[in-house]
Amino acid sequence: MSTSRRDVLKMAGVALAGSTLPTFAILNPNRAFAGVNADTLKVGLIGCGGRGSGAANQALKADPNVVLWAMGDIFKDKMDASLENLTKVHGPKVKVDEGRKFIGFDAFKKVLDSGVDVVLLATPPHFRPEHLTAAINAGKHVFCEKPVAVDAPGVRKVLDAAKLAKQKNVSLMSGFCWRYHEPKRASFARILDGAVGDITAIYNTYDTGTLWSFPRVSGWTDAEYVLRNWTYYTWLAGDHIVEQAVHSIDMMAWAMGGKLPVSAVGTGGRQVRTDSLFGNIFDHFSVVYDYDNGVKGFHHSRQQANCENSYLVQTLGTKGSAMVNCARNVHEITGANPWKYEGVQNDMYQTEHNELFASIRSGKLINDGEFMAHSTLTAIMGRMAAYTGKRITWNEALNSTEKLGPDTYSFDMKPPVVEVAKPGITAFS
Image 1: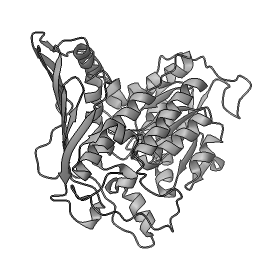
Image 2 (image 1 turned 180 degrees about the vertical axis):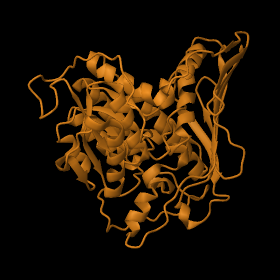
Image 3 (image 1 turned 90 degrees about the vertical axis):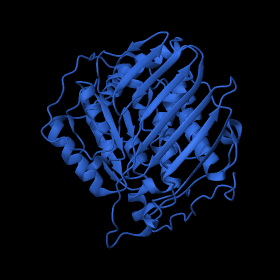
Image 4 (image 1 turned 30 degrees about the vertical axis):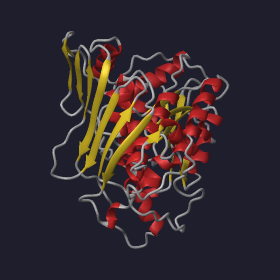
């Protein structure tokens, strides 16, 4: 795709794309700020890393009358780099003055209080339920990165926030970007329309290489080191089956029409990524999901260097097979109803924001809340099964009392120290 969610923002010199979206707004016409029209949508960015910066870039390109109004992060250097790059690209559409640059663990509250209409939530996943709940309570439209939680209590908060978003008439869009990719929309529409017959099994993978890490710098506390390397700590990221491979799990859920698995069994561990540098997460997972209609979902994911990579979802049915290969951009059905996608190849990241802002303008609001929470919990359920070595049911996963991470935060805190899970020994809670 033309934009990477993983790459650090590299946008200098990129021209601002035009837009044909409508210019009317469903806003309070009496609410205006200096240099900003009454129908201007003001965006707040919460989490200014590469993903957040990319989302802000896409938001500013999605509508001709959108400005970046406020930013929040716990790291000043992240915010400064993001603001500099966004300003180079978008110039006058970036209106973040010194009074709307917020640093600290409470920065999200200050962004929400700054007069923004839309917020982009792109911090590490641990913080998502709290930030999302606060944003919806404040009546803001939300773009919410995936996954939406790292544990079941967080998922339950997100489900409550999704219901509240409907009551408050605000849009809630997820970062499950493949849902906005035209080849996959066409593929899964055919699957759901019966092109492969009755589904018997779904095989999905997310096998990649290793991720980035930041070496420790003199002066960093233990908490700062962990927070800067958040992907390696289950309490912050949920492990890579939740943080990354959840994309493939979400497409499995898509193929199933949102039907929930009744149970999961799995395995996993650390074969090569055993150094303490990698926190307490696994480097591979294998999970089998069972559905009450007899369908089985087979998931495999790993983060290991110099191995065969795979990123696909294959749906097997009584009349054929549908292949959605994200790495090779293959979308085809074989069997009784052969088909191959040959249509438009859109930038799904940009489409997300185009549709979000169009929904706000038109009043035809989007709410991805339920499926984004369910897909996240399906991934968490797989992690639980792999960590414990036990069969975990959907109800057990949903009602789990295990809460990962602390309730309060500071750079002086002692971050949670959690041993690497041991199947058969680690208990479910």
